Image 1 (spheres, helix red, strand yellow):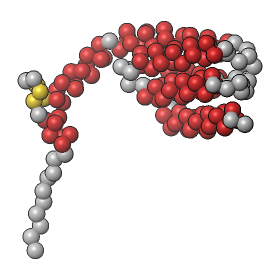
Image 2 (image 1 turned 90 degrees about the vertical axis):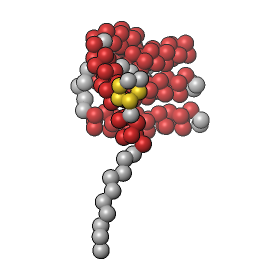
Image 3 (image 1 turned 45 degrees about the horizontal axis):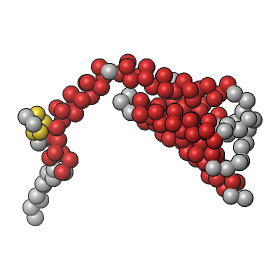
Length: 158
């Protein structure tokens, strides 16, 4: 019995090896990463500037519910920070910002306000931005925040 070994190339592998405009896709991707590294400091400064308004919410009285306009502003600031972090390869920060938006949106649509409702999400944004937390720990906290979010939504329907 003869065994035939075949190497199957995936469509993605073929695409990466195919020249595009005179260079291979892999070379173009490598050049793009190199270009992003040249603006990393600028992107980092922009991200920190956009995160500053979010961090200011940590100084307020946690028992005081933000107005709907303030919650909309939190969502807008988190969205702007998410855009700023897109070039920095910070996926956990991006997920934390999305979670913060989800919290603000859910709470904006209800009168329910447990004291400090946004604090855990803002703290996770702070930890992931400063890289003071492992990916595994951040994943775990995101899961727990999602459980809290579900609870908030369920409670608001009562």
